[in-house]
Length: 252
Ligand SMILES: *[C@@H]1O[C@H](CO)[C@@H](O)[C@H](O)[C@H]1NC(C)=O
Ligand SMILES: *[C@@H]1O[C@H](CO)[C@@H](O)[C@H](O)[C@H]1NC(C)=O
Ligand SMILES: *[C@@H]1O[C@H](CO)[C@@H](O)[C@H](O)[C@H]1NC(C)=O
Ligand SMILES: *[C@@H]1O[C@H](CO)[C@@H](O)[C@H](O)[C@H]1NC(C)=O
Image 1 (cartoon, rainbow, N blue to C red):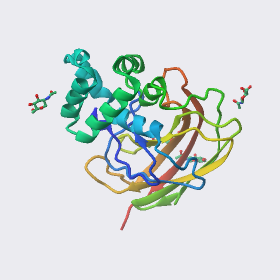
Image 2 (cartoon, rainbow, N blue to C red; image 1 turned 90 degrees about the horizontal axis):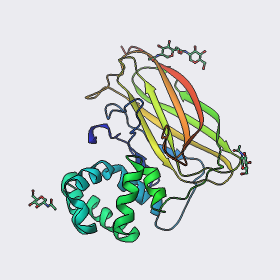
Image 3 (cartoon, rainbow, N blue to C red; image 1 turned 90 degrees about the vertical axis):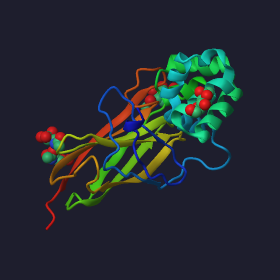
Image 4 (cartoon, rainbow, N blue to C red; image 1 turned 30 degrees about the vertical axis):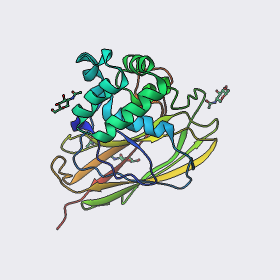
């Protein structure tokens, strides 16, 4: 599952999520997304929700494997040692320990079994992310600049409005590419107060290992969601979906 993690350059300490939907798989090739917000949603203290989601995004697959390998009998430390080994990351192991000890071993494992591979729902079950179910968001702008140009950076402009505020969710950008290689990225969108929000996302459309970004028409889809987009779990809903397109022209 590591191979579907999206490579994102993250600004403003925002977290990114690998896209693990049953729908289109998002491949690492070609996409370098960054986001700048015109109105930061949150400032201040240690952010438990993004800490948890970041951890779950890196490790949720591995927790399942660790449980299967006998981690259930070993308590937080034992289980997290296996997770650390599997992810080959001391940082993930530490995050695992921190979270597991904070919520308790039984709850940690139980939430995993309930959440399957949905990091946001997992962290909601662990009370690390707020749940807001009457939220909404309507996209008021989804545009790309340039509309047409050679390989290089394409900047997506996004604006949306929420009347009730939003729940802990995800902002997902998917690109249908000419060679059918799926490209996309998503960001954790923490609960926002009612208001208007805007951000820019940059697609670094240059060939690399995976996607070739050959000349042609590309469609882009934006989804703003409560929970993980397309998740079947509770507290999940697609608030809004918008599409736009752009053209990569032959370079000379
Ligand atoms: C982690 O990996 C090391 C080296 O492969 C091994 O010696 C150790 O037993 C492993 N620990 C766990 C908890 O799996
Ligand atoms: C906003 O919240 C109210 C009260 O829960 C609800 O009735 C309404 O449908 C919500 N609006 C939207 C746009 O979801
Ligand atoms: C983009 O959408 C148009 C119209 O729906 C479709 O004809 C075209 O094949 C799509 N392009 C890609 C690359 O998916
Ligand atoms: C691109 O979007 C515009 C309007 O948003 C639409 O008219 C046009 O057909 C689309 N082009 C393709 C190739 O899908």
